[in-house]
Amino acid sequence: MKIMKFLNDIRKPDNDLKLKNRIINTLLIFLFGIALGIFSKWLDILEIDSSVWWMNIVEVLDLNNFFSEMAVWLFIALAVAVFSKTALRAGLNVFLFFTGMCISYHLYTVVFGGFNPEDYMMIWYGLTIISPVFAIICWYGRSESRVSTVINSLVLFFMSASCFSLGMFYFDFRGILYTAVFIACCAVIYVKPVSFMISLVTGLVLAFMIRIPFISG
Image (cartoon, rainbow, N blue to C red):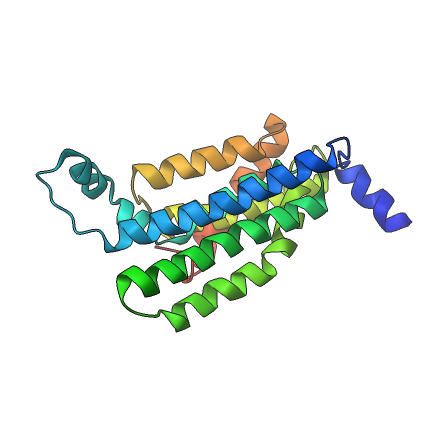
């Protein structure tokens, strides 16, 4: 088929991984999502005591808010997607990661937080449903084609908007963790210097021009 040939020319899938290993990898990603969902909600309801050294670190780094925003989740989903062996597995892995994260976060909130954030969770469940589509698109970003350059421009646009405070006439760092996430994102999608720089500049220009309230700080 012409469509499959076109897609394979962008990035060729790797089907060499044994079925057993595929199942194990996907299961681990699902469990990783569950663990991070619990961890992020635990941080969210944690009562900070600055006299305790590790709580002081949590407060200084503002980890509570960091795991309540989009930047870190977008990056993890991106990393899961691009390092999957095929585009379809990228969609499946990201979907299961978000499924595990949302369910564990929701249940932990109900059981230990004492309330049901139904409206808030509907947003995340909605994102979980459509996440495979974006994961598949991101998977094709890790190659040397022109299509990948366009995809990575959009990836860096969204990551810039979520990691920095941007506007037409201003730029501000949101914190060391957000900057670290952006740098890690660049490392994940980097393939060739020229195409990467084109994507980076294009993504930053778009982020300066277009503000996205849902993912911006």
